[in-house]
Length: 134
Image 1 (tube, rainbow, N blue to C red):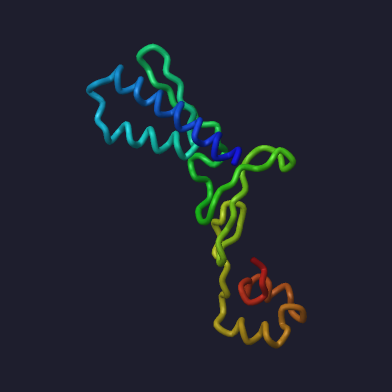
Image 2 (cartoon, rainbow, N blue to C red):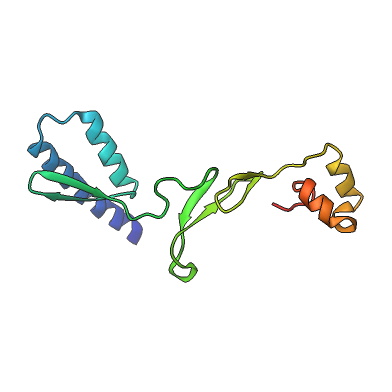
């Protein structure tokens, strides 16, 4: 409930800023304004109107998109500053930049035969997916 009220208040302030912006710049194309509104609503930017200028500032560690795959999330205060990439299945790495795959077609069979524990150095490097390394 509190988040809904905050979002509504934020949108009202945003709407007022856009109206002020449009009244100052009557020749601005609507397409450009829609982009600014979308960025503000998504919470990626903060806007300030000073005189005849609209300034957009970004304080999100997730901008511009640092994760190659998946979603970016800002770290919580207990986790420190920065971001964490939430990788989709099949990807891993700090930025989800590495594909989780088997390099040999026999990997699933070898994993079923417990080769991930019997021969871990080779298997965990070459059969990442089958040995559940990512």
